[in-house]
Image 1: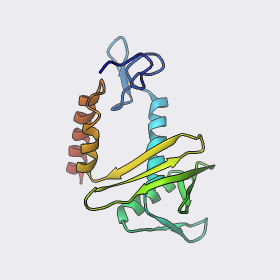
Image 2: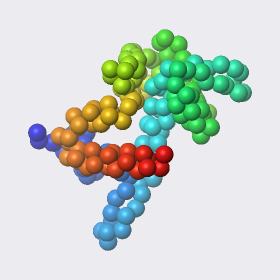
Image 3: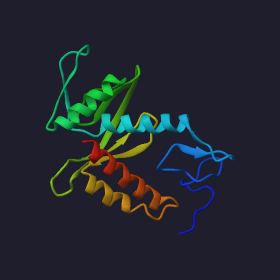
Length: 174
């Protein structure tokens, strides 16, 4: 498969888009962190946590309590709230969020609930910017299978290698 300069796998300055890291090396070989890219990825990470789950909000707006089928979901969404990325409300058609005081409303287009066969949950939602996104979370093995489909990208092998390294590191940490 040929990639064009305008391909999504290249950034605006024609450098290869890096799905794995926010680090780059300068001309002297010194590594540096692209904090703007890191911020964008963190925003997308917390957005995913706040949209792709099965929780409901109980209690007042001052002290919301999340309830749902998975204690892991509750812990992740509550941690996101403590960092300023708050899940406010869910209906069958919308998810309302507040990110550092900015209100966001996502239109839910489809939900594929977690099942033991799929081992993942997916939500298709239209954001306030009009962009339709697919949010997906699940068991490591299920997500790895999805990532294998991206090996055709210029850095697809690196993506798999870095993902496996991260999973091993997290497993060792407990």
